[in-house]
Image (tube, rainbow, N blue to C red; front, side, top):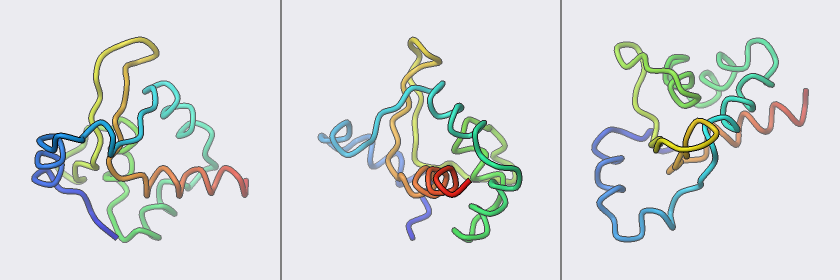
Length: 102
């Protein structure tokens, strides 16, 4: 699995087809998914994807870059908390899978 890095994010943004390669969702929709997850989901996703819990939390809007990494998304200001461009949907797909099985 690709662990997005700051360099990867930067190079992706420079790509002429950047918007075509990303999923777009409102920040409020992303937070709603996070808030709907069962207890312990952040730890479960982190363990399954071999990454830190803080990296998973950063994906859902956290900003702890001392203990977690950037996660391949960018947030543009706008309605509903802004628009989130997601380059790597792996964490989101894991979260949605946990919602289906909850």
